[in-house]
Length: 339
Ligand SMILES: Nc1ncnc2c1ncn2[C@@H]1O[C@H](COP(=O)(O)OP(=O)(O)OP(=O)(O)O)[C@@H](O)[C@H]1O
Ligand SMILES: [Mg+2]
View 1 (cartoon, rainbow, N blue to C red):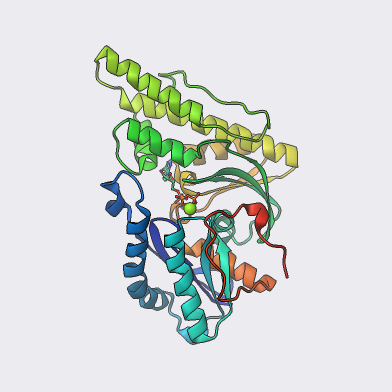
View 2 (cartoon, helix red, strand yellow; view 1 turned 30 degrees about the vertical axis):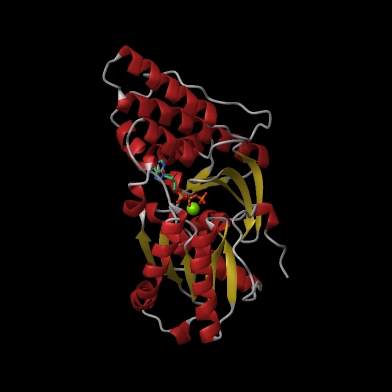
């Protein structure tokens, strides 16, 4: 089954086609980052309008790049949530419209399950079950993945998501938006032991917390400003990144061992972080666990992951009618059981 996927949950407009064997045939991503950078974050209404402008021309292009026509398609998938209401609405409505016009089956896809499934899209031989650390702008969650519809949360952040902490620290250091990739780049030039920053331990052993770390970075910056010296930005980035990566890796290994899962994966925008990828690979190798991660363009928002999970859901027999609405909040636990 060849599936066309739509993604518009936040500030990336993306269209992708996944082929009959699950291979990605095309994955077009139009980022709005420059548009939102001047506001220091995503402006929902601006994002929705840009999705509307971008989608039409991308539709012809994605089919051309994939080398398929409408009659080759077996289904349509679009992100239903979670995400920004107006932004979600654009891709979801576009997906429904083309499914209706071409008489194709349609399914509304869970954005976070799709991030996780990017691992299978990238490596179709990924064995089930596997453990996935989902680290994105809005979520930090450990997920036991037994199938496209069977994802169980083992632990999650109790406050900020890891990506959110990166973005807030980036803002504190005057690095602009989005902070994550910029903090990552500067961290490579700094000393990770320069500042002693906290690693939070929660009551639930597989939960996370990053708000204390962010506050500790703020205090460090304030203290330095009082001393009136030049801010050691690279050292702060490196020390912050060290604290985040250490906790993410440690908690993931604990979860794999507690659950008896031998295959470990990562997903979401922060999974593009080089230090996290390298340290997770090392930690897994030293414990005899297998680690794999998606390529960078499948970590941040993209429609290939949506088309891939949509294809798996359609093959499982899932269908949505054209009455479904976006879900701005949609916990993984609320993915409905199979029909
Ligand atoms: N190299 C990197 N290092 C650290 N963080 C990064 C890196 N690249 C991207 N990020 C962070 O990833 C986040 C974006 O990821 P993603 O697009 O998956 O999140 P989102 O779609 O906004 O959130 P969600 O998927 O939870 O709704 C941002 O917070 C960004 O700063
Ligand atoms: Mg996302």
